[in-house]
Image 1: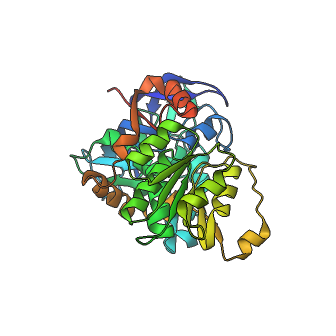
Image 2: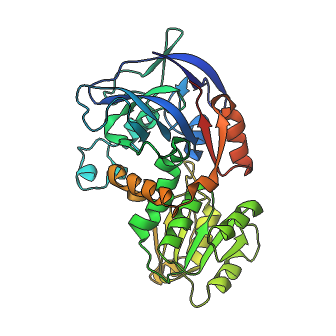
Amino acid sequence: MLAQAALMREPHGHWSMETVTVAEPGPDEVRVRVLASGVCQTDMHARDGFFPMPCPAVYGHEGAGIVEKVGAGVTHVAPGDHVIMANPSCGACDDCRAGFETYCTNAARLKFSGLRADGRSVSFVCDGQPIHGSFFQQSSFAAVTLAMARSTIRVPHDAPLEVLAAIPCGVNAGAGAVLNVLEPKAGDSYVAFGIGTVGFAGMLAARLCGCEPIVAVDLFEDRLALARELGAHATVNAGDPDLVTKVRRLIGGRGARFCLEAAGSPQALRAAVEVLAPRGTACLVGSARPGAEVSLEMKTIQQGRIVRGCIQGESDVQRFLPRLIELFMSGKLPIDRLVRHYPHAAINEAAADMHAGRTIKAVLRMAH
């Protein structure tokens, strides 16, 4: 099976559109014709060599498409099904068995080795050269790819795949952090630090929970304007030298009950902790690059404040992602307002627009 794929030939490079040969699915794999794929900050980290996945490589980990073929052991999806492809997990380690698949012991190997789940073979070949794929066990920057059946989720045929491609990572991470981890109640104050896809998804989830007030913090004024339109009661520019004071004043009282840090910035995480009320919780979901560190005043933490991390919303993807789709389809989670579409071949433009803040969520459309 031949397919067009966006290849990264060397770290810090540019994607090139090339033709690859796609392997046959193994017993626990699904071959998917990808119609759309989200572009995420994690793909930028991979491009820039921050993961141990060697080049040449095919990235992409928010794929949506149609099943073409399934392995012998796959029963929950069939050819013709519409699917999205999500975060991989082994299903057998202690964390997976305990219901915390996002902390899977084998996650790093499954996401970044460049090899299929068997640990030996590759998904793609280009001009006789093996290409590292199976990024998050899907490499959805290829128009046809192999996905791990365990993390392939069937979706309704009437749901727009070109919007659902925003869900598997970005929307899942932000909304999951709020709905699965923080679990705010109506009337709880909430502050979003960074309102890209993850931060917006968390803010929309907080609105669903009845949080009040909701304050959004970001560097880009157009994002702050959209945040006000979609439910933020107030916004503050992250570059404001009196950021912490202004946010605390907007919240009133002793500080925020919950903060979500979605920028992956040490400065933002420190500010998120400083605006908390005693016994408040700041949750880090931003995709920080390796080596990023943060300093916190110890007495601030001593006042019962909680700082915790969260990967992929701590979600069970087979159960939680269909819930997000239902919320979107019912109009309660308007993630389509975050999406801008690009042709597959315009992937470098999409990445540049995301970096510059011109796009919140870039989604590639594949041509078939």
